[in-house]
Image 1 (cartoon, one colour):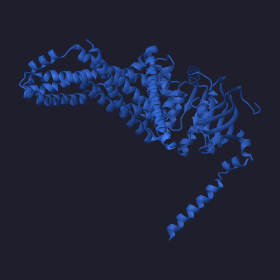
Image 2: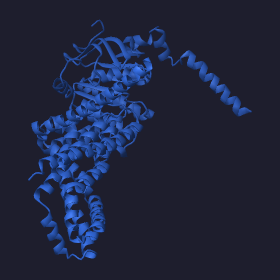
Image 3: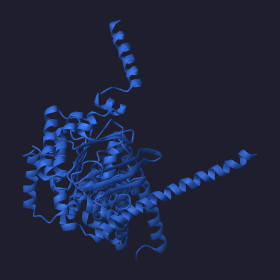
Image 4: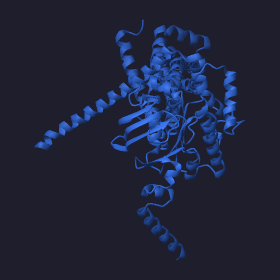
Length: 273
Length: 271
């Protein structure tokens, strides 16, 4: 009898503890983000040196990701066109393929695929870099030199990611459409001009804009999770591996969750029109 | 202030206790370091000497007690106050802890560029001087990973000295170096002492270098200070743990273990 009583209670305790842990984690992320943004706005990149670091980061996380993002979203666009045409053909509506690809890519797949590539390239790298600095006492050394690791390492990353992830997302939109176009031109009976005209007609500004807004938030989340995991690395090399894995898994989870929230929000409010 | 002091105290530690979680590492330490004094903290592995050093520069928070550095209580100080104080301190880590993404030259220039208004050309000259002082001239453009352990250590020295600090803290300056390099580091410390009268706190377990550079030696054992006095006085100490440390006598229980293992091992080979 007491066992039956304590069982659901145990479950409650565990659910409560997990919820509390999750909320504490979100709180830690928010705190990290808040501090980094505060540093960016209050002491805006002292004497250009922080700016230099932000530009360097932007090159690494943004420009460096262009080839792989291009390749992946090109193929995603192509796949969307193929899959869409398969169904639309039955309805005799193959001329709707450009619209399908354009809307799916710009509203959803472009930003999402970009975020996932950036997580793999940069989110993990942030965790590994900061985690290694923790293990080799470099973070302590910075602190001992009266340099705030937040200002020195984290703030430039936030700036770079907040700018570069939306840029990448827009670029990935273009590449996705190009992927769809390659199908449209070779199989679907479009000319390049007619495909792009159809794409342009099917898109409204808010389609791209919602993607950009989401990407901005994704960039912030990826940086926050990557840096937080890096800072919470314990002692030893294997801990760096652990935080890198955690950074990737948690970033993907959080990006998807935020995506759901934003998409629902845009749906309810009828987009940004 | 009973010890022979060279000046007024710059570091005061009173009943310092430090904990990692539930485990207490330092069990109530009391000592002072005077202006211009070179204090060597001697102790075995795991004695708490590195924790003590980290507490003195404010990287660890005291659980209780006081650490006053230049009158600032590190346990209660704000980050801003600590930052101001740290600009007057130099700390060389055991492994160097050079920033891996920067070159050696950039590492040494870093505090200068961040905390002073010196022109980049001046900073460049200062970096060259500092590197020359530690015998690393010409290595400005190397990345830390291209240097040997000893060179990294010396580069960390140069970085610690970059801001011409009032206080220098060294964690195991000569551990893991060959005797020639270790002697070079000792010479460097002696020169600094003579030329600038910097206050230095050096954590080490190298007896020879400790006796060479120290004005005063503190022996730390299991989180307690078991001896504190001039080097000569320490040599005459009759505290059993101090004697054991100075005479390099192993712990008795681990001694038995070692012999047993050794015997088993050698007999095994003979058969």
